[in-house]
Image 1 (cartoon, rainbow, N blue to C red):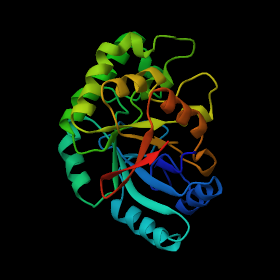
Image 2: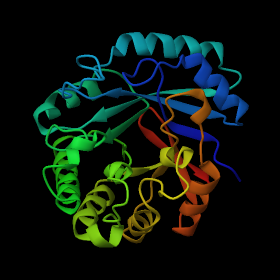
Image 3: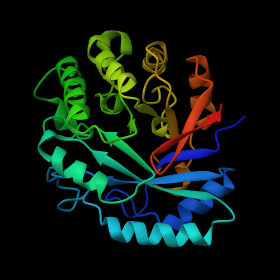
Image 4: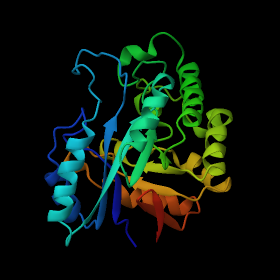
Length: 273
């Protein structure tokens, strides 16, 4: 079987995308998907950066909802469209994030760690003050802190997201090297019935980087009793919808998973892999 649902997608409602929602929907249908979930960015207290507007990841939730529900009705006989959100975690906005999660009847919520102590690993100067190993240890530490402060989510987004942006030529990252930091995160997810976003974004532009989480971390999640996984392309434009899905499906099968999940009204629905 193939994966029929992309559960991590962005449109012009996210600060880092200009793609019309309808174009994302049309692309999903062309690629054979029968269900998608828009998970627009809400990342409060994001740092000011020269190439982004002020407060780039505040989300106009009513506007997002209005357009999504209109398109849901238009395409109701063609594809299922779910109402999701990707909430960026920082300790100082945990209460605001909890309020946002409760503000609407979302189908699905991703919690993601995009920053380390208010700094963005996407930018090369992020890596200058310390060693890559220390920075990555800190990333996993703050991830664990923040999922405890913000427990109202369904899956943790791209667990080892920071590994996407390690300086070129550095081979510091592996699950084995950071397992003492990663395992407590996985154990918390399992103990609290949370899942993992199996995120294929890097496969759209790299032949060598693994998806997030890396296969070894996904296997460890299964070993610890993890059950819920969702598949997401993290697409910000129509061409990237469902990118690498054949590969991440095989990685999930190799890790021992036989099911993946979609959500409706925050309730997990199993599908055979």
